[in-house]
Image 1 (tube, rainbow, N blue to C red):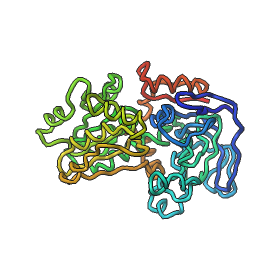
Image 2: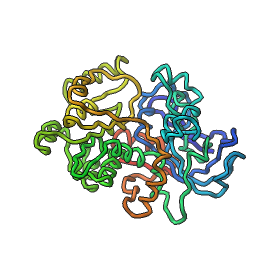
Image 3: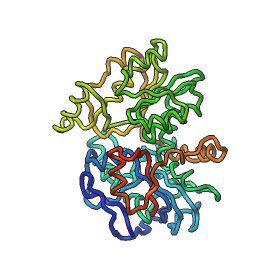
Image 4: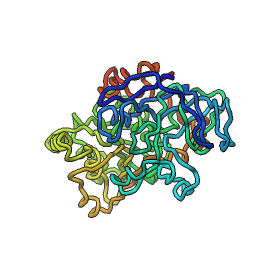
Length: 388
């Protein structure tokens, strides 16, 4: 089969690789109908995630048709159309029983590796380095889905791939980012980053009752899309974000702030140059510019929700601001399986059509070009969907 493979920093290739096979009784093999390049895949593309190996198959947002199931899978059969959650979760452990699926204790065979970096291991993840299990991803013609009885949702007839594909990751992630804000009627929510996850955070905040959402980015096409979702926008290259938010909120600050940027945040001034230098010297793994700003802007007693991906260690963290102003920080890889059914129901009711975020439908063999234009912000690219 054809698959998108990682061969080093900014070196993606679509190659012939062996077809996946059933390895465990709870596996399923899915023939991919749609897959996507996620913003967090760019951290792999740009060389910021450790433990990648040449030839690793990428991709954690995918859906398709079940073609084979292991003997332990009782809720799926060949011919079922499914979306696959990016966290690989057993459904039985302490955390899965609490619906904290991205913390599954049984799905990461390289847990020892993650423990050295994080203290404890998260779950296994499709196509996202050997730190999270080394599982082959879904930017391919076929994929093996471990614990398929827990990690998939069946899609009703008549719904297009483009409506439901993002139940695999970015819609639940954006929704969880807004949900962690504990939004009350009348709240103002500020969202840093208007990439795909940020776009879903904006719309999810409104679904959960926010009165006003302020979206912060620098790319006109992203800001336009945010405005299309009802947000007020700030271009951080043209305005001082802190001053603009204080003016909008009568000096109090937003009730909640969502960091939908993560480790490759862009900024200006001395702090940004400090982070770039430390990262280049391998003295700091992530650039927490957006996170610092979100903390400083959030109102006293407010919540900072962090759904942008961070991989390691950050510097100049404003812990004094967090502690002295009674801020709450909530974060986590999304517990996707918790959200798939309720969000599918919202789509079916017409409350949201996730396909709005797609700007570039492409063929699987065009994946290397897709990575480049997505990473380099060319051609007004916001979200790429690949068709095998």
